[in-house]
Amino acid sequence: MDMIGRLKDSLVLQGIGSSDYWKGAIESRNAPIGLPITIQSDTYLPTDATPFYLRQVPILSAFTGAHEDYHTPRDTPDKINYEGATKIAKLMGLITRGLAIDDSAPKYLKVDPPKNQGGRGFRVYLGTIPDYSQGDIKGVKLSGVAEKGPAGAAGLKAGDIIVGLGERQILNIYDYTDAMADLKVGEETTVKVQRGGEELTLKLVPASRD
Image (cartoon, rainbow, N blue to C red; front, side):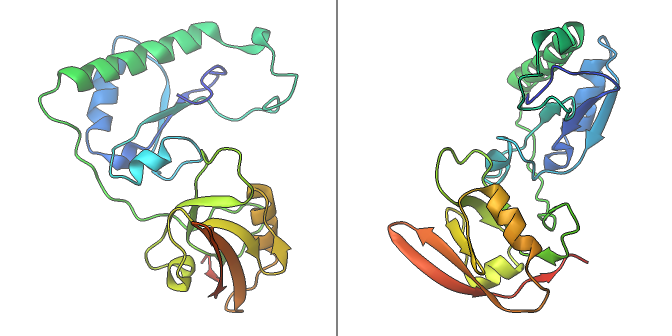
């Protein structure tokens, strides 16, 4: 459960594509609660569930959506939908209890990583999957790379920490997304990574998001 305090239109349940177990479980467990629910199949999420999925563990993430107060002092307790949060916690509790008493674990389904979402007009695709739970390090740690993407072809691996892309130094995810915006499809560039105690410079050719 990541940001469930602002229930308004519906509860977003993400990661449904990670297992065929979820849809039936959600429908049956929500029957006595009646929450409005939107389901999303995406399994590569900007939250702590993704590292589990990369290790072949089905995931389910509850989210009530981004809001303009996120990470600001304006995100005050009076704006929380306490009744909604209570219902969400009850639903997730019922789903969890169902998992605990079920005879078998949910089956893991493999889903290919999407091309980088990028935002703000990104045209290039690298096939990198940032580790959004990386902690306080300089650079962008990777949870994985798409098998057939440019990053994989360049030799990047899960666990690598990107510290440079093209002419830019990379200290965080924002540096990384800004650097990606400068890249051109089909034009070779370099990416610097820390791997163990070694820094490597690899050649990478961005592909098109299309």
